[in-house]
Length: 353
Ligand SMILES: CC(C)(COP(=O)(O)OP(=O)(O)OC[C@H]1O[C@@H](n2cnc3c(N)ncnc32)[C@H](O)[C@@H]1OP(=O)(O)O)[C@@H](O)C(=O)NCCC(=O)NCCS
Image (cartoon, rainbow, N blue to C red; front, side, top):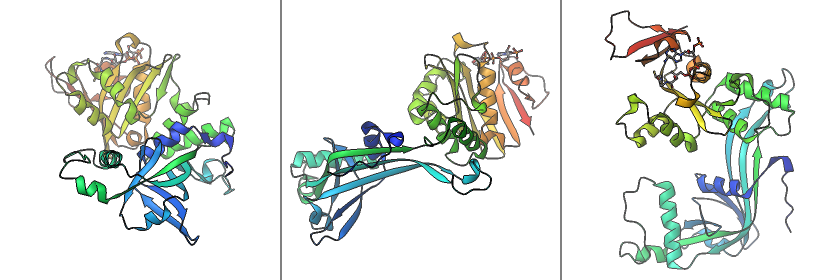
């Protein structure tokens, strides 16, 4: 029996570990050769029937490992945490926050052509999601020979260990300090890391930059899984009329900053985004759900967006608005041009520092 080596505070559940394997660009598999020497392979892996399946050359080194115990590993760095986040002198607090997964089991060959084809289809879907090929079928003339010739193997998982190292060993006050520092540093991935930690540990005190009107929770980064909700919230607004929801979703995904607020029931009730080149940021799609307006949420979400590292560091922040000029004026925006305007045209506004 192999001892489980995860400290309880860092343990992530099996589903999370499986999800990490499913999205990992590559998976490393360690095993041994017949003569006992170690072997480490990097594979394109997919989950299939609970196993971790991958392909290889029929006469390659991987065939030597069939039938042997093996361990697979995948990891994702969330944020690099320098010692200075927590201590001005000692190096000891330096660490990396990450998600990791290890799966233990036995390597086995997949021989059934239909299942081999399914694994290969899943690999294609994962690595070439845009399509552009005839779907792999074990009996299709294009693939019949190839499917039979290629090696498809799987790690039959007997035990899976998920790990999420996100500062759980620290006192709540220190963890909040790390969140504040991530927000302040604002390097690539830092805001997403802060959002992930806040979402994962809902009982952690809220850091200052997420202070929000009562009953609401500010979200400093909307994940890919939350984009549809944002697109739906915007759906009713005049300026997105006729915009394809898929295009809107892509525009939101491509934004430098996308923030929002959720109400007590978890519903997304406010959203705003910005595109930044480091010098100028453009704000788009500011919206508060109709039944949640006039309670300070618009101001809170705009405050968060203007404080977002990708916006905060810009010299100019710009936007256009048709009806909400006084709302933005209260946030420090002024008209870019004093030219008279027609009531149906938008006004360009700018805030500079
Ligand atoms: C504009 C909008 C985002 C404001 O959100 P909100 O949560 O209602 O605003 P808040 O409660 O935070 O209000 C902040 C301040 O702005 C004022 N304000 C809000 N919307 C305003 C508007 N359209 N015109 C004038 N003032 C407005 C509020 O009265 C409040 O003033 P106060 O500081 O004196 O109390 C929201 O009304 C909305 O989603 N509107 C429809 C979509 C839209 O027009 N978006 C802007 C596109 S450019």
